[in-house]
Length: 413
Image (tube, rainbow, N blue to C red; front, side, top):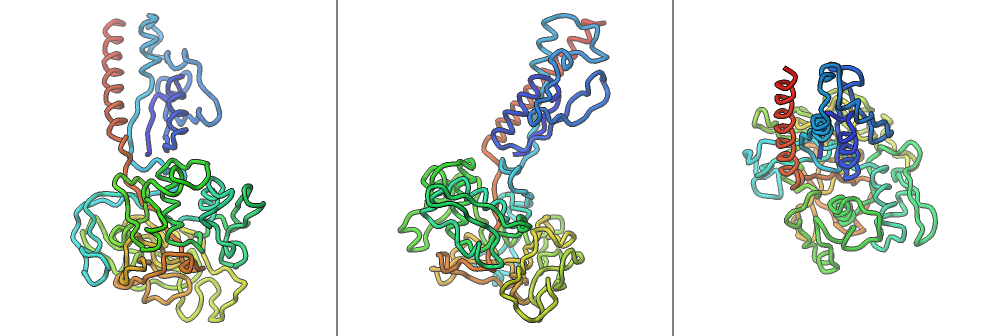
């Protein structure tokens, strides 16, 4: 969740910033500069330990005549106000954008596997970018020192498109993104790998062995039977999850301001241009008879054809996402037809422009055989249940602070 803390140069404000950041919130801290009642700036006190003395927070140039200890203590304890700016708690780990206009009209029904193509009943958040090697390596380091569920695929190291190196032995494995490949989308991930990543986020990014408290339960309950029959679905109350086809489709093609859909995830009805990044506002990494990054029609098995997420900096969807056209296919939560498969969307570096079009998705085997150098994923989320509580706390703190200030001015007069 993104939270604004005002008065953050005070002792309480700094403590509040530190506590919220430890809980994973994305905190914007603003406070009164020392010695001035007018200038304001960012206080990163939780990160570097630069807490201003309480007296500095209590007294400014326009409060010097307030010497009552009672007033000083009230100033100290009411020095911080909280404002929920909205957004998922993992926003300091994954960049999210909000997709609004709940209950929007559906697009052409034949464009999707699901009914009500692109229509979503509630607002939600979706990753601005595909999940990267760096982010997935962090996940592996948290839960895969033994890796009984094979969240790591050795081709992440051996294949030129893979971007993660594993070191050590079972029980003490460690992981790192290959040099220069931190921001490539992770590939060689199965559908079930993506669910376990979502569970890990839902459970607060714990560092512990794979199990119900980390990867096997939370947003999804993963069982051997559910894997075998491809019947795993999202649990109620899930905070982080793989987007359904409709959620993915709406983020890619729907303009909430216009109330209509584009044909391509670059906010246009004209097919993107294939070429190296940064490209223009309608460009993408896909095959057009030649590979976008090399301009050659010859495949080199030793070359990495993936572009960094967001590398096509001006090619953005109507909701602010990047690379929903090309780069890598992305797993969707939706069960496909046949029911043993799951939906994939977006096209990739190795496929032609037809697969970038809104009307064409594909399917993939959700198991290990579906892990390849063309497929990754992005994560979606909903606001935390605690948002309403924080907002109510903010309102109470702000009301108390304003009431005290009125009383202080009357006493000074």
